[in-house]
Image (cartoon, rainbow, N blue to C red; front, side, top):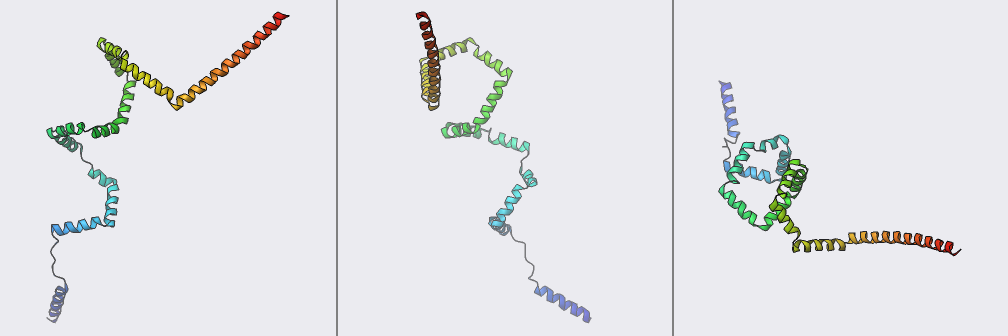
Amino acid sequence: MKKFAVLFLFLLFLTGCSGGHQAAPSYDEMKKMMTDAIQTEDGKKALRKLMTDPEFRELLVLEQPEVKQSIENVLLSKEGERFWKTAFEDPKFTESIAKSMKKQQADIMKDLMGDASFQKEMEKFFGQPDMMKQMENIVNSATLKKEMEKAIEDTMNSPLMQAKWQELIMKAGKGTAEESSKEGGGKEEKTDEEGK
């Protein structure tokens, strides 16, 4: 019995020294602890490391049907349609969209220009009598002529073209001088022979 009494006292002592049973932290307490931990420098480093992990990134990628459904529900809905209409009325928005798509559009046009079926369709389109008449009207219009004159004038006034013009004139001048000196030398010889 002495052993049981010692054991009982020992257990009583242990339960008295323990801090008592603490309840699990509430949701708000847990949320606050997590937020505080994430906002520390170590928390930020841990998140960055986690985001670079390929396995974790695969978990973040949405599945194809979910993406398709969200696009249909949000972007193609009536509200989405109104959004796109108002967004494309803003010149800054349309400019930024056009700039972001410029390279892709150029690549598409290059691919299409090499496509034989596209070329045939373009020939067919521009070969129609109505289109030919429209093109003729455009080519013969005064505004096109003015634009072409302006483009030619701008080209001639550009520093690069002026340098090329000077180079061509110098070459032409040298060629003419050489020809005239050869012709002049040939005439003098003929006059000398005639005088004898």
